[in-house]
Amino acid sequence: MTTTGVMGLDAVEIVPAGPLSGVLAAPSSKSVTNRLLVIAALAEGTSRLGSVLRSDDTAVMMAGLAAFGAGVRDIGDDRIEVAGTAGHLSTPDDVVSAGLSGTTLRWLAAVALLAPGPVVLDGAGPLRQRPILPLLQALESLGATIETDGGRPPLRISSGGLPGGRIRVDAAESSQFATSLLLVAPYAEHDLELEVVNLGAAGYVDLTVEAMSRWGAAVAAPDDAHFVVTAGRHYRARDEIVEYDASAAAHLFALAMATGGNVMVANAVATRQPDSGIVAVFEEMGGEVSGNPGGGVTVARPGELRGVDVDVALMPDQVPTLAVLGVLASGTTTLRHVSVSRGHETDRVTAIARELTSLGASLEDDGDDTLVVHGGHRLHGGVVDTYDDHRMAMALSSLAAVVAGVTIRDPGCVAKTYPRYWEDAAALGLRRAGG
Image (tube, rainbow, N blue to C red; front, top):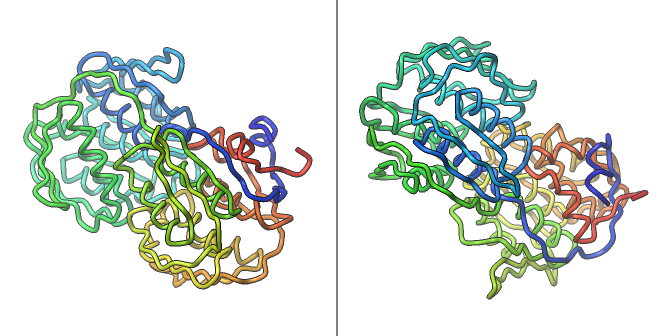
């Protein structure tokens, strides 16, 4: 099975082929790549980023930053050179498209406050449905004037600059709202004091603060809900290598968990990425997790797959993955604090429940914050939708690897964050009908 053989297909049928095993490298982190691109674009001087993720989400971020005047240049071998603006941005000549990238839309909305003229941000259809209103309210509290389509993109943002001061943002729907404000805060006229309420995936904000500090910003965090960013402590250009993507690695490990295989991600390192914590959940479900002396992490499942009761607030991207494993496990799997996943590329809770039910599984969606998955039901083949959602496609591939006759629509949607997913899965032994 090759990338070119799958990515352009309307649908792909997976053929179960026994345990999936092997050693490979996960792609570089989308979260880290996009954070560093924004920071480097605002920094003074020229930075070089190595092992940059090449995906739809990072491509629209690079294009967006270039529209604000940053010099973004491909220098080969997954390296990007960024000539920073020192915080002096240009006003884009045209609408800046974020494609399907919520990260790009939300972070560039705050970047727009540093541009001298009005900025129009938009995205593809599904992105227009993703939540952003709490962030817009925080930007307006900083003096921005924002015209929207009922609180949704397209956004026309006009600002007289970034004054700083005390602001508050509700991050119940996304930690990216807090990250957006923090990333631009060093360029405020006065210190910015940010209060973040209802923050679930705090680890992603920690990832932001750590990157800001490495690049020269001064960020104090008296507690988990308050951040103080010193005005005038701007980013300084530097060279940096992007670490592996823990979210992508989770999908590779899930193939081992679903099929009773053994997968080593050779470039997995200690990281603040919240999704790295999913390996502990895999252990609870019957997996064996080990670090390797030469680097990397291995996940294997030698025995029965067991249901778990787990709080997913810190890793909402993995709700589809854990739901899939739950239907394959014995007993009941209860996923708590799933509500953030309802505002991703699609309502992932409703979507995964619908698709798994169509294959014979039994799930209970309370419509709010809990998803209960009953394992042990007889599953059958069928056609499942991905809703143009990369994580739905990758999660459902783990089910298709053990349940005969499962066809996955729009497999190419993985290009959002993991363009070579099907190629890597094939290297582990995943097969497709006719391939």
